[in-house]
Amino acid sequence: MDDVFKALADPSRRRLLDRLRARDGQTLQELCAGLDMARQSVSKHLAVLERAQLVTAVRRGREKLHYLNAAPIDAITERWISRFDRARVDALADLKRALEQPPMDSSTFVYTTYIRTTAEQLWRALTDPAFTRRYWGVEFGTDWAPGSPMAWNESGATTEDPEQVVLVFEPHSRLSYTWHTFSTQWAEANGVDEGTRAKLATEGRSRVTFDLEALGEQVKLTVTHEFDPDGVLHSMCSQGWPAILSSLKTLLETGEALADPQRR
Image (tube, rainbow, N blue to C red; front, side, top):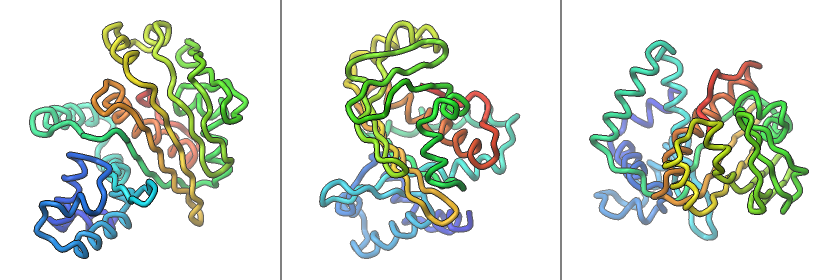
């Protein structure tokens, strides 16, 4: 946590975080544009932000894309804001964002967290229905072979579709699959109104990828969700993933999942 406060203490680094908040997934060259800083200085600031886990870098071919990572800020919030104050603080923060900030411009949501567990245990938590049900409220019906269909069971509703498939299954390392179909049954079971469901149904199918990296007594988990940046799902998942992953982390580190994680 000390690294986070040190990283945030520098106004240049806060400015870089603001630029990623406005448009996530930028290269070093893009971040340098319009800044009164040398490329080497920007690179050094990004390295500090990466060490503090406030920025996550993802390789795409020859490019290195930088994403804002909210996990350390969430950890600070969890430490000093009680559950009784949470709703009030969230409401004020949502209002401030709505009034002051433009929507995030990116087709990719990236979230990185570090969990005190083993890669084997985390992998089981991502694939075993006994685990996913506890922190997510979702069970997957699949043999996990690449190309195999996936049935999503959530809130008593089962969603199946030929395009709901496993994309990558590399045990203890990488898991990827397409997102579920927004059926009427799913919407009714999860309290989603028909207008929102209809908008979701018009969007292209998204995909989510989980990358695991063992680091001593911890495992670095990076979740990458790719979708339409202007769609409804972008906003829903960007808010939902931190809650789901916080519940996953709590379950693996304490044995108890957080109550009512935000799901979609």
